[in-house]
Length: 277
Image 1 (tube, rainbow, N blue to C red):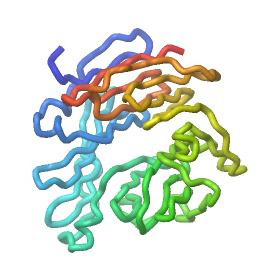
Image 2: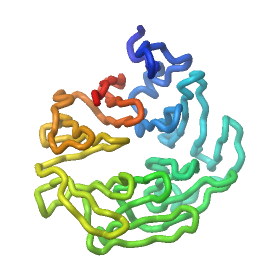
Image 3: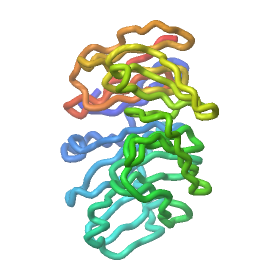
Image 4: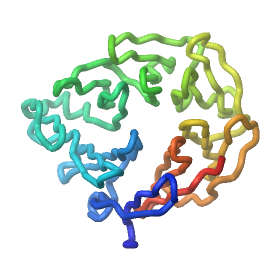
C-alpha cells in the first residue's frame, strides 16, 4: 500500500482495500484534516482551503465516492449538497468572520454546524440558527445536542424545536452524550469519569483517575490518561486495559459498531486498532 493511503476493512473477513479516493494524498490537505467522523457507512472530515476557511467532505466506504457537503468561501458562503450549491449568502461581514465553522456533527440525519458563537442546522438548503452565545464541549446522542454554556452549566438542545434545557447541578468538563447518559470529567474529583442520567439528573462515578480526555461509542469507552496513553473500558466491565501507549497522535475516535479505534497520527496518517470484545 502507498504511504498515507486510507483503507477500507471488510467487517466479515477483515481484508483491507484502498479507497478509490484518498483525502490524504494532498500534502496541503493532509496537514489540515481535522474532525474525522464515522457516520453509517461514510467518513466525514473537515479541512481548511487556501483562504483558511472550512470545507466539509465525505467519503462513502462502499464506493469510495467523495463529496463536498459544506464549503465556506471568502466572499460569501454557500451550502453544497452533492457538489451542487443549494444556498448562497453574500460576502461575510466583520461579525460573521468571527463566527466561522469550527466543527460539525450529525443529529437526526441533519448537518449541525458548530460555529464559534452559535450552533446552526442546515435544513432544506437553508442554515438556521439554533443557539446563539458562547459555548463549549458539544456532543450529541443522535436526537439531542449537549453543550456547556457560558456559565459552565450543562445544556441540552433539541434541534427539532430549538428548546434548550439546563442542568444546574452539573458543571462538567468534556461532556459527551452516551445513550441516556452524559459522560464527563469532574474537576472536583481530580478528573474522574462521571455519568449523569439525563432523565433523573443523578450523577455517579464510573472510573477514578486523572483523565485528560475520553471517547465513547457503542459499548466501548476509551480514556486518555495524563501521559497520553489510551485505555479501554470493555462492555460490562469495571477494569481498564491498556490499548495504545504511544503519544504520536493528534486525534482519535472509537467506532463501536466496527469495534475499531481510529487514530490520526501527527504525520497525517491513520492507524486502525481492532478492539476485542
